Length: 301
Image 1 (tube, rainbow, N blue to C red):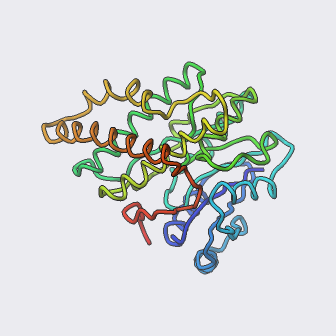
Image 2 (image 1 turned 120 degrees about the vertical axis):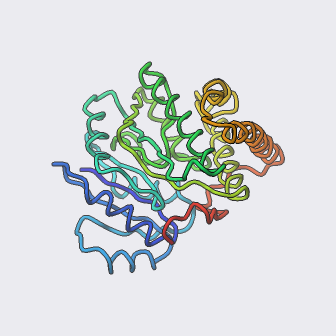
């Protein structure tokens, strides 16, 4: 059984698109879609616009995304490691081959987690759109190389899948994609990158939204050190330099993009400085689902 968990936050139109992108999938295996949202209006909207027995709604109690996922892991968990959880968000949507590509990877019993490939839908002719394409391409290259080498890397929270029967809960206090990846790796499972399984993402398009999103993400990954001693890392300041600094030099296609590149270097330095400053002042990561709204990442609502 495949359970697809779509975490949303009062974005009914975008969530409807996310659900429909999974309903279009052509696979033989049985699957069910569970939409988790703290607002009942989303459930009402989906019921009005969908007629599918494959879609359920779970009212998020409002204690954070990881808390809600833990509840669903326990409620829909299975001792059969051939059963799968697929985790994604309501403000993104996926390519028509996602389930097929993810399930291919799970044919290897040593694979515990499979991550998809985030693709920015922001146009490259704007600074923030260019940044999103630059950073996503850098992440793609790093995941591809680490996957080929059989080394550890963290899944993407936009779209990843895990075997059931391995985890029935996980610690709160860090990004779910990061901590779940670590826990599977610690249990001896490998992580696979399904680069043909694309998930389409609207990224922030102004400074305030961009910094809010990135700082929260950094804090969520840095907090792993408080929860798991000696955990391997792929998302870190030094790994960004290692995997991205040289590649980024050759990414620009014109003078305008070259100047955006320079700004991107300083912007990344700023958000790491800001994130570590907040961590050191005890403003640690708090898993409040969308504590700070990022309006420019909303696509349809």
